[in-house]
Length: 393
Image 1 (cartoon, one colour):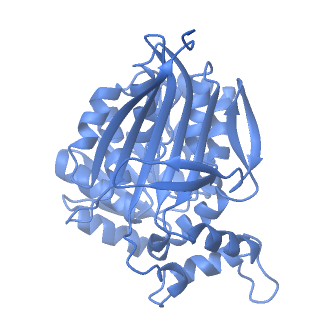
Image 2: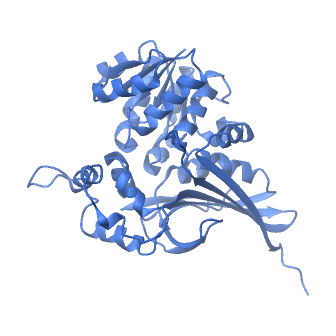
Image 3: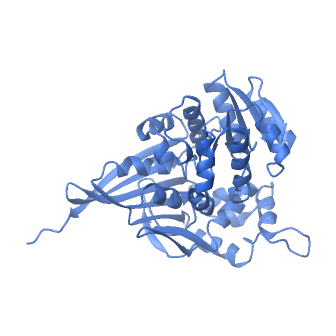
């Protein structure tokens, strides 16, 4: 068994290192546009991991990287630029594909692509999209909660993010964060996918401890497309973004208003504003704009709220993923991706063709593996908010 990890960044390299430790019998190949990055990741993974240079938009280069491989894990974002080429390469090579795609437009397009689904199924391969933390674990949590309701109606996913953490983002993550919070983003409503303004529709969201109550805004994330596709009976699926520090939302809006979210290259310098900001954030420069929040703690999490009825009563199940970090630098998205790869290795995946975590993995099994990792905690509370219909006095 051989697994190709595409993308030698934090997620890809950590997932490879984890798999090397948990499955030492599996051969590992790590591919990146920059060979030196792939070599560093391969050295960290150990167990004779192989490093290759690959340009995912060059068919020959990608085909060479996929040769002799059984599974490819794609962590090479941003996915709205890279995912399609790698999926096509995987189908051509007869290789199972799994990624951590978190862009809603990619998920909408891929799940609606009947030709892609049929070609993957005919090739006998699985294309599992969005197997990170959000989406991924968030989808599995939603499925686990939906199964506990008699009549499910709504799913709300809120990313609770620290603005102070932006200074640690890679350029690809900076690009992604602007991509999901500008322009139009996807919401599932009344059986249809609709477009709503990114970082609009201000709503208050109340988290579980240690989180408080924050203002949240529309965000374009894969859960909307994936859960709407998997559970068309739902009245609504939406994803929202909440910066947890006081005043951080205004700062984010100011960056967007200043044009720093643009991916179009400027005539002067030939670089786009978002690439410039991504490079600046990824440097060692002091950027007080991102971290002068006094004593406010830096915390990141995801809140999954599922609404419906159970026993004739309106019920909301709230689950909080709190990312606490670990001493060895493990990343929860790497852990989720590694669990997905192991499920493919063990043939613990239901279906062929294009799949999503909430339907192809057994929820309790996946979550049991995930909570065994040291870098995340899961807490859940159930709220019964009244009888349905309301009793007549």
